[in-house]
Image (cartoon, rainbow, N blue to C red):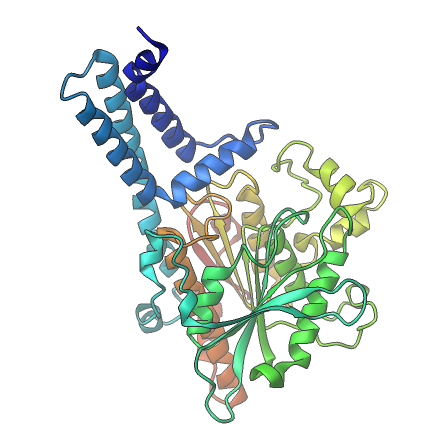
Length: 447
């Protein structure tokens, strides 16, 4: 028997074993494993967020292989088909979890966003959940590579605007998007795009920002660049017809860390060298799966996380510069003046474990005078919203509802109207720390 025919003989079995391994890994990826966690993450992430495509691929491939055998299946073939069928059941479970994202985020926002507003949320391009290349590109205008620095390295951002011009005298809300990539890789071209497309289609102006990366640039340069971008946006408010008094921020992973710091360090002159007088306040923040404790005091991150940060990102020894590390940790910068915040994290995240988000939310909820909302998504891996998926399509819809409510409250205050939304949330929903240390979505409001 030739090697080729021998390989073909066991093709269904090999593929069944591979499919089973992929399904198991998607549900139970490796955690805190120096060698295995990162590849386990990538396999889990793609299987989870592209589950309909994975399922269709497996079904079509298996049907083709079975047809080629003309019904004459060996024992190995049957075992392989059974393994693929079992793996498919596991992937269907992933799809079921993703389809429940709306329920989880509805629960997280209830009490802050009125039920009728949640029900009437603008729909994202749902076909993108099944064909991820469809990001809704034609529903907004994008201007690429606009420089926002006047000295030093030329840093750039992309601007996302609605297709239609504003009404006479109208000022649009704005959002600053900060990409992730462990502070060392990534760019504005890869993250936040589904959310920015959706918001621009619904009247927002988005600014997707690049910042200087490590190891060439050490902390706090990443944060300084983001604040420079924010100051630039305010300076150019007239050019883009935005309201300089209503700008919010979002970011993912390392960008989630910077997003939280942006919200918690408004006006801090140590992060505004040369532009100390610039207004860097923000009206809301939506950090996705962020790092909130750079010191990893509960030893939840990947092994040698702090050592890598010391060498590549921070540039100082945490034992000798504990104050500097704490100052760059959002959990140590929590303040009563924090703006409304909607924290999102997946409970299956192996790159930035969810426990850090729970602690951050618990501490922030006890301190902040503004609403703190928390959405913990069942089955979601790190980077779950990079491309359109069943989960991310729903997520951007609910993020828009949160931001729309905060914006409406701002407009009501500006017009002298009674702001009953936040008062109701503060009075009725005030969860204890124990409520945000378990799994599942929750909303907490400052007291």
